Image 1: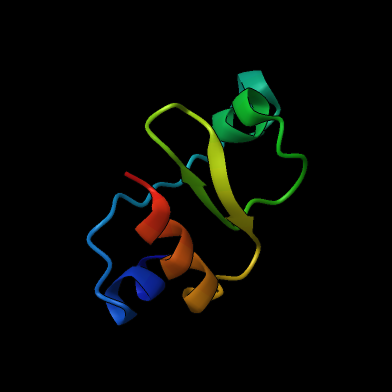
Image 2 (image 1 turned 90 degrees about the vertical axis):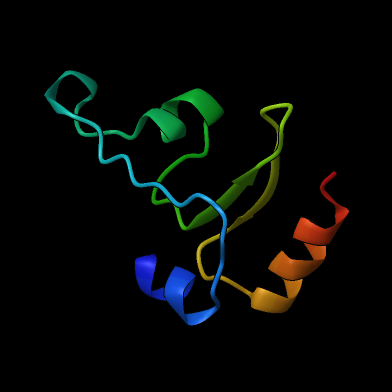
Amino acid sequence: MLETQKKYKLKIPFGHNPGDATSHNRSKIIRDYNTGGTLGFLFIDQHDTIVFSDFHLNTKKAITVIKTIK
C-alpha cells in the first residue's frame, strides 16, 4: 500500500491492521465494518461510512469518490 501512496503522491492516511491472537488475526476494520475477507483499499468518510471499497486501486474511480467527500 505504501508503494501506491508514494506513486500517486497521496497525502491521505493509510493504515494496516493485521489483527492479533485474540481476534484470530482478523483485522479490527474487517470486524467493525463487516467487510468479509481480504481487504484492499477502503475509504471511510467522516461519518464512519464506507464510501469506497475495492481490492485493487482503480485510481480514476477512487479520485472521483475522494472529490465527492466533503
